[in-house]
Image (cartoon, rainbow, N blue to C red; front, side, top):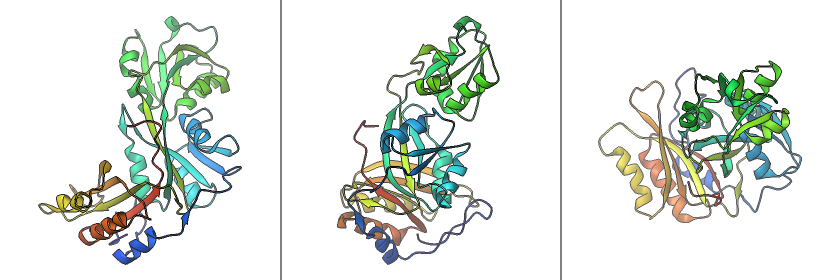
Length: 314
């Protein structure tokens, strides 16, 4: 990281790093794989049956212990403090866009991205057994899920949309509180876990509904097959600064997968830029680009290098 940045209350102190230190970070021992993943403790936001649980099981397999958590901030803190080995978090959806809170938390906490996966999201309208669609007056779910189903939900008459903190948690809520006029938007797994009925399947507005999840660890792990790197940086608020920062990749024909900007707290109208690009620590081109960027950035942090999920192009 280059140049410590803090907003006082939200971000911990970020340690100053020279370009040479950044290269040392990128030259950490490359691991052929992440060994002994079975029986590791993996934390995710939400209740049992959440899409993040499905992502965790898909990535690690069934031989893990899962730890549901009520908030994303708590998910990050559990891994940072060693209470969990890995975290699985959503970072963007193909319909609803980026999950900005998690971008901010990647900057706030000292965790590394060690993997990613794209998961097809299939939403279902779930209620108590014996309840018909005509009896539903309230639909509960996470705001992202509600956004992904808003057109189909608008077709339901006299129905109130109620945002909650989690998709699976919404199923749990109507189950435990015996909300007979309510339904929840969640996964088929959530319906099975809580013994509820699926009123209508695939209620997402677009079948091409995918969420990209990140796998986080306290320890930096650069697998042998890593081919994607994520960083966050800021530049001076002067003409051409962003162009010059991006040119370090263009000059080396490095493909950029995604660019995301977030406010730099304490400095109105200045921004952090998050970039995912093609490359790995073993690639001299990648290391040179990072070193070049460090020369023009006022702050930079390498978030991790990992294999790009080829399951679906988002």
